[in-house]
Length: 162
Image (cartoon, helix red, strand yellow):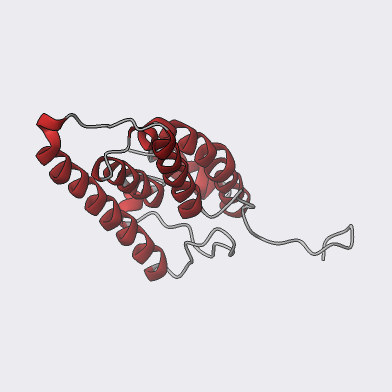
């Protein structure tokens, strides 16, 4: 309990689970596409859509999986509703402070292509805005409180996305 008598939780306090934010963007894009169809890829490039979309989706899932696995191997949890026990700076975290979210973004792009859903692509900036303000900024503030100078040094040498 803290000085106000309330239980304090050692968590970042993110807006929503990140996968749900991405899924919400995809769902809204697909609903909008049902109301007013907008194709993303012209007929002449349809075969390319499958290769590029599939490659992006699989690469994104692979990156996110690697990042999650790296967190577990370091002894901490990727879930934003649990306390972080270790600042992870190895594996994909050497190149990006948010490889899970980068992977989810690549997967989102790949699915937008595979589904030929322009509305999903048009909603991606809104999804990323929610992610940056409602998730990443809160996680960064939490990590700075939790790890202090270690996190500030990590943040100074590793970019947020790439």
